[in-house]
Length: 282
Image 1 (cartoon, rainbow, N blue to C red):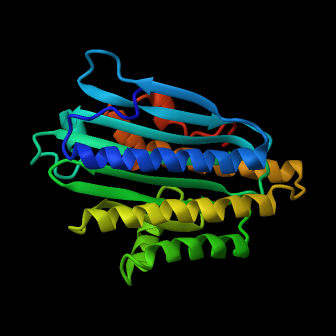
Image 2 (image 1 turned 90 degrees about the vertical axis):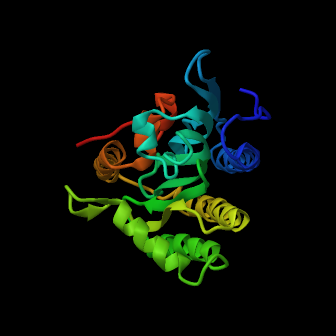
């Protein structure tokens, strides 16, 4: 896939700028993870088959290593005219006649050591009748440590602070409500921030906020990994982690908007199901 290819979707110039940032962030996160693990990511680029109603593709990067049992850091960039199912999930799609361009970076890690928390981070933008931004980051430990939770939330709070006085409180609450499993009556993890369909009227400021979230993640999560990765653990600790992963699978397959968007846009299933853990128990 040609990373400099111009789209024919709405706001193509800006989505191209966003793709460049997402790919740069992807490369820096991959380097940070490889420096920790000592194992290289597997790289797979994919494109829509010729004649498909949508265009574009993505850059899949997956690690199966000594610290990261499985981790994925993916960038996607698609555009075209959405199906009716897809339009129902896109703000402003009716006004744009279904024409859209969407891009983003999404990552999930599943760690070998059960004392290292699973993490999810995603930032994305979509052009329909307007530019829309979404994303966030959240931490899912099997064994929660107050120090890790505090550091993670402090990083997200700092990313939110320049955007709006109430941004952190608002997006933390949104995260707590979104990453909740109603059928289990329990939260997925210890939270973070989450925002979606964001359009303040200032595209540059919305994008700057989104980038701060990406940079905050890159600063804080590798520190948490290094802090916990050599903690001794037992077989019972690992068993508890495998059952906790079951909750993660349930959320992503039943409730997650990103997974549903992947289904709706007929994207590469290996990419949007990258978040599935390598081993899980119920």
